[in-house]
Amino acid sequence: MTHTTELSPARPHLGFWVGLAAFVVATVAVFVPGQSSVLLSFVACAVAVIAGLAGDRFYAGATALVAGANWFLLNSPFALFGTSTFGWLMAALAAFSLLAPFGAMLLRYTGQVEFGVPAGTASLPALVRNPQDFFGGVALLELAIFAWRASADLPGQQGFAFGPGTAPRLFIFLLALNALGIMAHGLAVAGPALEKYAIRGPLFVTAATFAFAASIRTLGLVISSFLLIVIASLATPEMRWKETLIWGALLAAFCAFLFPYVLNLPMQLWPRFW
Image (cartoon, rainbow, N blue to C red; front, side, top):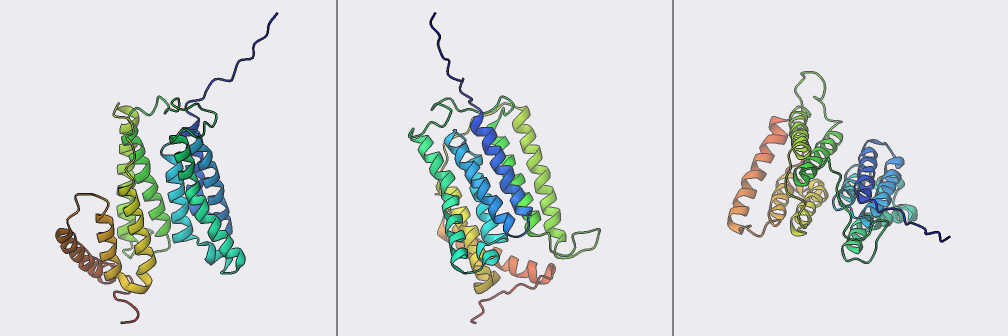
């Protein structure tokens, strides 16, 4: 009698669920204090690599972005571990961890790796009927969560006392409600599948965010806001320099009036060396 060994059936949803787990861990790391936050973000990126290899097209990259925002905006390895050799080692490991999920997705896309799920079989669960709306809502909800964490120390977060944290809290609440509505629409109403990613948009929007974070303390609010708008405008090929420069100047002037005078935030307007 001949015995045959059956291979375990492919799990087409493996990448989605593993990626979701990595995304949740990265989000939790934003709220964990101290060195544990950095280490937990490493774990999230490692799980995101597995998700990318298994065919995930959203959560792996989103996890890397959340971890990067955590490391560079909230819990810097240098701030937690110092500028010693170990601090530089952790910073280098953080940079590598951010690139690893994207490398995993690239290997999967080019067919170099089939991690448990053969190429062409990875898919989304049936409950995600409109992937574009669902993942768009997830991205907006994560932005609201991160903004709430980043502004948690501002006064005016409790009760009806107006303060620097009142307006951010209001906008974050509205953004979260909007995100939940979009996610619900993505689950309830059928819609188009995910399209191929365009690198230009996320690249310049992310670069604009990091440029603002790196320049706000040295160049001041006016110049850093102007740079933020100009760099973010490069995300679209329809960008026109004349309109962008005018709009950037107007928004920078609005920020210079809103934050120091309306919200009473002690923000530096111009470079320190002026």
